[in-house]
Image: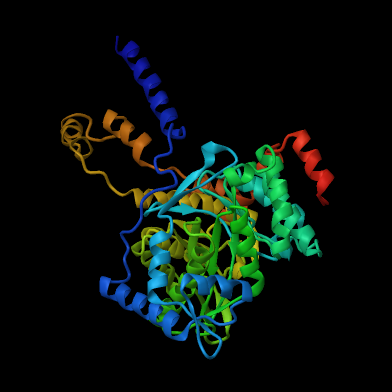
Length: 508
């Protein structure tokens, strides 16, 4: 009888072990978790920074205002000063803030992949314009190509914790600016149905590329009804002046109903004050100037308030994408934007490391977690970027995707309830087998509360050594290769692809 009693127990143990090893049935911490618990600025701090930004816009104003924008700003209530700069009155700034959408959708071509942005919901995505790619075979950097852009796009298409994709590298093998913009847009359409973003070199590139989007959307005018691409634009150049080409692109994008991410990218100690408070005041003023511009052209148009504080190493003048200063600055930027009720965009995880090493992990983990805890709605540059934004890495994409899962889990926090407090489960374990392994309470928590990494190594030293003593770089390289070999999506129909190729010079 004892022998018969033992068999079910062994079978049950095997089932429990198998269940523990299996992935959870649901994602316990999906994108869109709520941030906002980290507040580096007090209420008085935010009032002082905002007040200084309003003074800068009204008393110092904006320089180099293109003629077309000058007419629009005058009509909205801006005032041209004797020195040619344009004062943006406090009333106009506050009006623009009040009219800006608090929430809006970022559409994917697949509606199931769309996201709602705003409030304090956090989403990690991409950005950047890397001119070098960390080669999967050689492990060193080389010039980025159009093929790299296609490969990066289809790789991230499989990554659950990357909510949207902005082209992360520049195809340096395409010299003509129009061909570059066209083929960048095509790479996005062909390889993913997530929300995407791109950039337009010149305003005259916008209308024809929108025709390409219409082909993918189902016909003339279809894209404008449900735009699944947003534009990255930097219409303000620090310190406090407009850039004519980017302003022209903004007019064109708004005309075609393209949501915009207006990016301010001042650098502390170079194009903005070295003091963190002074930097935040100027950078906020500049991003508010972009908002006023959008409001004056088309009130209520969806705009991501992308105030990206950047830092230089004051010893050398080199851009520094990792460190405590950039972590706290981007967290403070997110806090300020959310305080104003604007859809916030910040930049984080811009490691200066060239290799996938300890520096890489520290800088990415510190800066991305700070931005998320502060409630940054869209955290740009957070996936795949290396080498102070000069490089992009396939291995980094898969490692960062796992890092984002851990961050989302941290944001989810701890749910305290009668069941979770586990009084009965504690009593059962203490009076029974003396442990919690295999208990119903444990199984429920396993599926619901824990994120299990697929790349991080949790083996014993001996098991790790027996398996080849591989580091994170090697494991990530293997995973990236597996995806690139297997994932070849066909998100354009044969008819759509043929129509695009008939109208445009596609260089794949």
